[in-house]
Structure formats: C-alpha cells, structure tokens
Length: 413
Image (cartoon, rainbow, N blue to C red; front, top):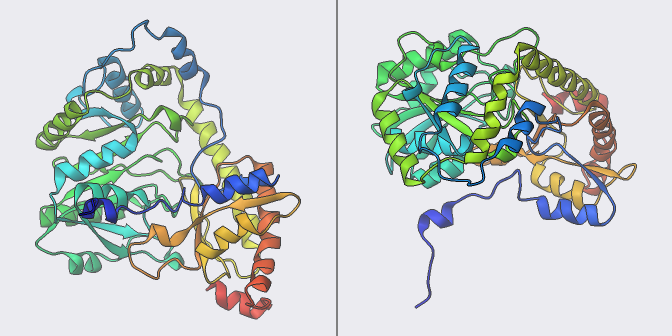
C-alpha cells in the first residue's frame, strides 16, 4: 500500500510569483539580464538605524516572549501612534512576517469548512493561508475598468452563506494598487457588523498612497473595534523582507488570546528581527514622505511607459507598488514563461507574475499580469523597452497577428 499525502497537502497551490523561478535562473545562466517585476522585493536599502542594531546582538540568541519583546511591541505602538492609531501593548502580537499574522487571523476567526469573502484579484498567498487553515475563499470580483474598487454591497450580501465568518480586505491593495476610500472601508465594516463577521484587514502598504491620498485603517473605523483584526508587516515599508517580522493588531480580546496561544505554539518570533525593528524608532516622518515620493516616481515611469504600448490597458495605481495590467497576449502564463525562455532585448528580459494566480474564479486573469514597480527608474525604463518589443514578438510567435490601432483600443477595453 503506497503512502499518500493529505488532501490539504494536495490542494496547496503553487505560487504564481515564484513558480517561474527556474526559468529565470536558466535565463541568467544564458547571460540574459532578468528584470524582476514579478515580486515585491524593493531594491531600496534597509534603513541604516535598523542595520546598525545587528551590532548590538547579544552573545546568546535566546527565545523571546511569544507575543514579542516589550521593546518591539512598544516600537510598534509608537509606529501606530504616528498614524493616529492608539493600541495597547496587549492588543499587538509580533509575528513571523505578515504571513503568520494572516494565518493566525484566519485560524482564530474561522474553522475548517468556514468561508471568507475576499475581493478578487487578491494577494495570491491568501489561497495558501486559507488552505492551511481549512477555510474556503469566496471571491467577489472587482473590475479593472472601475480601478478595481469594491463591488456593490448587494454583491457581498448575495455571497453570504451560513458558513461565512469573515471578510479579508487588503488596503492599499496587492495586486491592484487600489486605495479604498474611507466610505468603502466603512461600508465593509458596517456590512461585517450587520452580519456578525470579522474584518481581517491586511494593511502592509499603509503608507504607500499617492497623489495626496491617505489609506483608511480599519482600526480607525468607529464602532468596528470588536470585529477588526489588522495584519501588518515591516517588510515593504522598510525594505526589510528578509527579517520576516510583522504583527497582528486587534482590540478583540478573544481573537488576541487565541492568537497568543498560537504564538506560544511556535514559541517566539525571530529575536534578531525584533532587535532590528527597534531601529525604526529613529526614523522621522521624513522617511515615509521620501518613500512615498520615490515609489510615486517609479509608478509614473512605468505607468506612462506601458500606457503608450498598443493593446495595453491599465488605470493609474493609487497605492502599494503593484498593478494589474491587461496585455494583448491571450495567455499570461504562456507569455510569462516565453519571456524567460525565448526572448530578450538588448540582453535583457522581464519577469512578470501571471494574473490567474491572483483570482479564485477559473478563467479570470488570462490576459493580465501583475507587475511590481520595485526597481529603480532606469531599470523600469529598460523594462518598458523590453515589453515594447516583446508584445509584438510574442504575438508573431503565437500566430496572433499584429495589433492595428483600432483593434488595440478594443482589446485594451
């Protein structure tokens, strides 16, 4: 009798962000420069005050408290106060990245077989976390023509079942770059309150809202204190993805207690990462202001460049450092693979993330890609040149024909 892994193990999805990595490695071995627009790994330096903290590491790297060191929790409280959000120390749990915070939140708020409403396209790893927690994601479709803003509440109501336990909302959004307006966040909170649901808010990109906009935190919605669970991370705002440090923040005592017991089960969050995080207390408001300016410039370079390409459709992203673009390609999985295995321009190619992996509904996103503008402006300009030559070359290679101006406008719609 042969051994078999569990059904849960068989259902675990592959990451659309990482599964093409072998093709990228092969391209690099051939001498092709790969411009990585597929993953949210910023190229900015991790701030010096954080890096300097490593020099103060103790001689014994011991376990820390399961919910995080008092110093790290205090630094997170200071960060939230800077955004007008008051949290007690016993309303924060330090986690191993935002990923663990999301897994804790899903597991605390829902059980096996329960359902979570989520707007698609969504961060692809939600599917992995939900699978691990035994929770079924129920998608509500947002549309590119609407800037991927939230669908009407009537659609949320139709999606409710007796097993619905929570709404999972990412604001600013990965992968679309949408920043939900305050009235949108308040409407979702009111929907959750009316239907006895938790609101799990992924706010990793809180600072990154452009053109003068500001993201509304679910923690700042009046009357939603008991239902909101925020998951957060230091990875993106401090270009510190590798320290794997985040947090869960909630004023709901039961959720906090349950999450702390889960944290005790994995013993402690990374001690060195918590030490590094203390350096954030030395960063003033000018750090965030310059960060927003830098990513807004990068957004503009890529948006303006891609908007000029025939058959490409995208609206200007409002925040985070991603967008979903519709390309005249037909099959984004094939296109992303082809870019790495068959194409280069000026010695370079581009790696993108096929968008179907960001949808739960089969068939959606087939002509879309997610792009992260985490490279410097020069590399982003080079990426536009690569794609300008790649799109017509791909269409020729696949027998799709040239795009005439009128046809390009139609395909973009």
